[in-house]
Length: 162
Image (tube, rainbow, N blue to C red; front, side):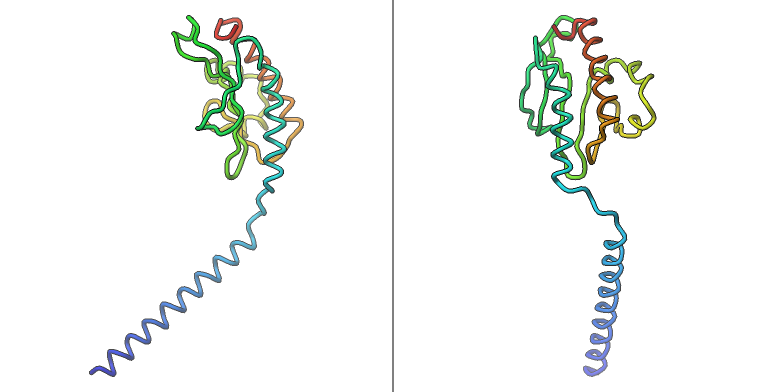
């Protein structure tokens, strides 16, 4: 009786090890076919370029402030009557694990700003005001700079920034 139990236990163990090795082989094969993710230096280069776009607006009431949630460059203005006594969050850039995010709050407050945006830039959107990039894309960054300028002008018109 004990011999049968030992034999069953051995066969279960072999089956498990075969299954594990099969799963490991499949995982290795998938890993080989995956596209290689961009290097961290690509993210850093993209983040620096995106920060440069926002830094142009670090004047007047908009000040740079570290933000623990974003973990990068963040522009925030003081509370105004138009903002109902709350700080005005203009934009931010943050590096994530798989992308660099560019948050632009004017497009959240005024969605009509997105009417002129190209389909390529819209494809980079996540949510209502965030654009994600894995590498530097000069064409899209230039378009994003124009959109940021339009957003800044709109915030000024609406007296959200001084």
